[in-house]
Image (cartoon, rainbow, N blue to C red):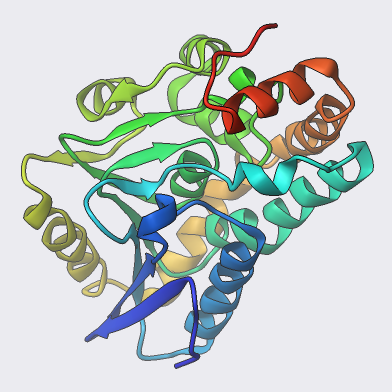
Length: 259
């Protein structure tokens, strides 16, 4: 198995656990981490011993608390558009279309790009204390890694717009009630066992049929390809705005933005 700096891969029988391992940064998704996630899924796709993947975060605080905002500061419109496109094509779409089941085990905050990473997975399980949200409008931007499309597909237009327009976090219980999550567990130590128990049930079924089912289900939603292109374009356009400059500056200076 490859050596990584920002993630770990642990195999347990037919299950691979991919852990985002930047706890000092709340497991934020910087470019290097996204690249390593892409590499990991390439490796796991070719590993015939692996039948399912669990994606989780290191530590007790965060699954992934968002993208690494420091990397946004100097991006122009074109660079931001390319950032969004790479995230879609190299990571989020790869997971979304992966032919082996992928479960997000949300152990803490899943915000912004972190929630988008979880939304790309086939199923989502969270510990009761976890919170999720898409706070991008607080930075003067929009979700750029599939959030506008995949959240809407799960919860409907009204709830998706409520989360995106307010930027508010919701509890795991609310996320379950809204349809963001498949399951909620009370204790953190129950999170991975719950994910593994679901995967173990899939291992009793045909891997070929499961891959076909994933493809068929996704095919029915595929006009979101149009929506994804719109999201990529609009995410990039936000980087030309004064709101984005103020939102990111306020975040880095730990103050409220003045929009």
